[in-house]
Image 1 (cartoon, rainbow, N blue to C red):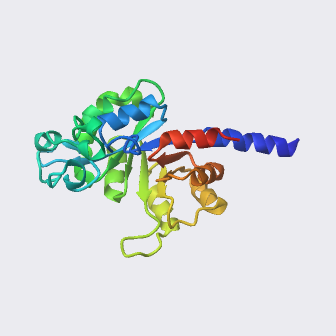
Image 2 (image 1 turned 180 degrees about the horizontal axis):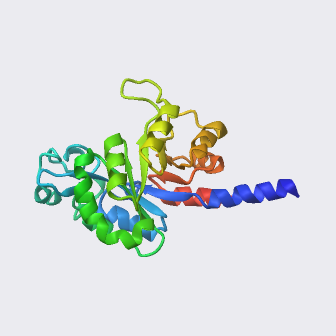
Image 3 (image 1 turned 90 degrees about the horizontal axis):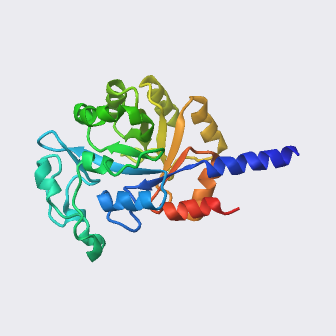
Length: 263
């Protein structure tokens, strides 16, 4: 009976994992576009992740790279360009002719696709804390939908200042398993920094961290939420769900959901 109870508890935990569409449904649609977000919502994704920069005129652009070359075909430095210059660029043709009308969206445009209810956006800050005042201006009117929003950031100042300015939003620290100089990330120090900044948890790369029950227990012991990115193989989806993470970020939310639905 005890074994059955543990099995049922594990099964419930796996089903409860939040499926987060990485840059929208980026396996099928051009990343970080309205089409990608809408496709993710259509297919029942629990959340979408997006990337946002502050533009030269103090506004926002939803794009991953520092410049527009890869997704728009024309090279503009995002931080050195005005919002209108960026949003005029096509951002979908590289994925297929059917996406030719997709543009680089503003954060407001992306957020407008969010359905009422439980689904949410994970907003990744790609720059530093200089974007926080503009983020607050955009997000404050959505305060009654706080449960549908989260902020994630690699840069400590961006995460910490976001939490200070908007304590009503969940904020998670992003981290890769290795530092820029290829050394293993010090997880104990990362946990200490995240706790000192009064953040809500960690959003970690599936690569290079020593993922196991002990690692999850260490993070949970700090009272943190725990998310993992970017998981695109069914076996890995299953593994992280069984480890008990809160959410899995994936390019293919349909694959992830179907994987978790299997016994």
